[in-house]
Length: 205
Image 1 (spheres, rainbow, N blue to C red):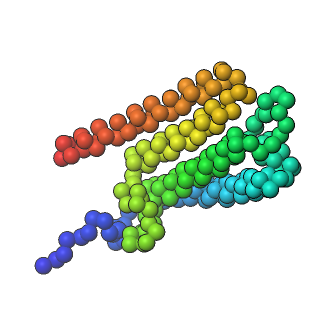
Image 2: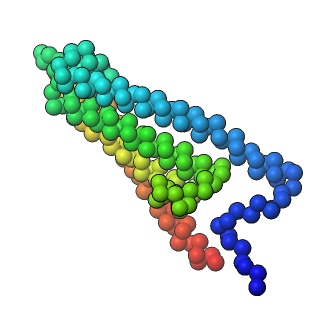
């Protein structure tokens, strides 16, 4: 008795007509975009190492490193206070590092998930380092995960602003909060829409 074909196994015997084959091959035009994001990831790694080096050197008393660290964060010391490595400066520096890590995670999600969804299968099944979320990723799931990641990044930025609120204008804090709430509502709307679509899909069958 013939074995039923596995729907998850690619059928390399399928032959497309020239025009559909050409249109389908156009998905590879996205490959340079994902390679560009990998280069952007390298830039973030370099930036992370530079900021981490400044933080460590400032902890050992380097005034030049402290100045570079504070200027990089845009932090302004209160009037009359000399530049020194306070708890607030350390907290802002660590949050800046966390911010870089979260953006880096977002890049990985876009690169790996986008390539897997829109370009070609990576065939990572059974690999010990296969991301857990990649096994059920699609365009809808990817949008929800990206929305969640953006909310996390926005939360870090908002927390940094609240910590240094004394040196910021109230209008800036207000608009940052409003923008963060807009991100939050957008992510909730995307997740709810995805839930409705998934609920209606079985009913349609």
